[in-house]
Amino acid sequence: MTENKSILITGGTGSLGKALTAHILAKFPKINRLVIYSRDEQKQFEMAQEFSVSEFPQMRYFIGDVRDKERLTRAMKGINYVIHAAAMKHVPIAEYNPDECIKTNVGGAQNVVQACLDSGVERVVALSTDKACAPINLYGATKLTSDKLFIAANNIKGNNPISFSVVRYGNVMGSNGSVIPFFFKKRKSGTLPITDPKMTRFNISLQGGVDMVMHALFTAWGGELFVPKIPSYRITDVATAVDPNCKQVVVGIRPGEKIHEEMITYSDSFYTYDLGKYYVILPPTHSWKLNDFIKEFNAVLIPQGFSYNSGDNSEWETVESMRTLIKNNLI
Image 1 (tube, rainbow, N blue to C red):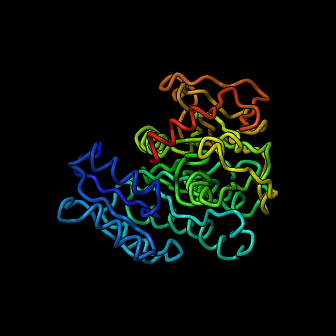
Image 2: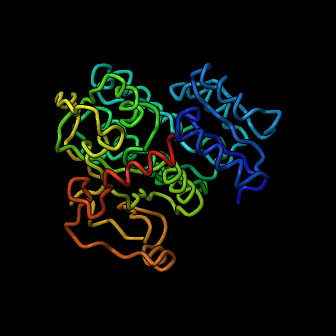
Image 3: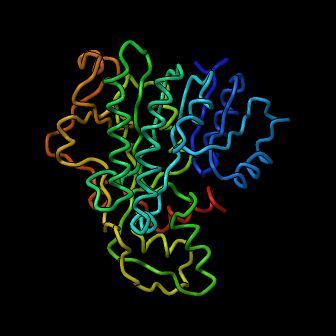
């Protein structure tokens, strides 16, 4: 499915973008081109040392911003698959700079949709976040809007065979700006700041995120929002796993933060199916037949009223399991 195909990753210099790059180059060496589209020239320079064009002739590096539709359209010439990972993602920064967050996360998403429709792209996967589920902060609200734009794009494509889908996941362990690298930096001081002792989050590894993106890329029919079945962790357990000798100091939650995150709400349950490894929230309107989808993927409608919340998850990481994950994935 990837031989002689070309893939573009927006925000490709981020943690997940680099993990996707490594995975694609290793698993699909006959790919035609892998284009990294991002606006940070220093990160592109550094990534080009790790994935050099001399060693990987499939690699291309495009400086560009998702706010720039003309540049996006130029970058997508000859591209078959697009993975949209570019976003402003830090909750407090988005709260303080709402206009900039909206320009990137909403305007940028619309530009990606339009550029894909205009450029002959075949398949598109947009990355989302648990913060887009019943959002209380601007970042989550912009990502929910982005999700809706990508899902609705399937309704305006006409005879274009393109498909758009979305993947929603929790905190990516060890990603840029995430809590574990933050704790590792803070441990030198002897104290670790805890926003709230009751706080929980969903936890997914970089490889888990990569696997879900590739699953959506290869299997989506158009309009699906995929949700992984993953464990939760307590923030206090993460701190203990990083350094049990550090004092944990409660500093209070930051603007826009939740105590617990959600990935499926009560209202979503009416459209949500169990696929085994993943849940999928189906769009209210779609161009394919629901019974065909159910048969193809052995999909089972979840009980009405089901919700998926990090605070009442059935699967939990422990201090020991977190310590093992950190050792195997980050150290």
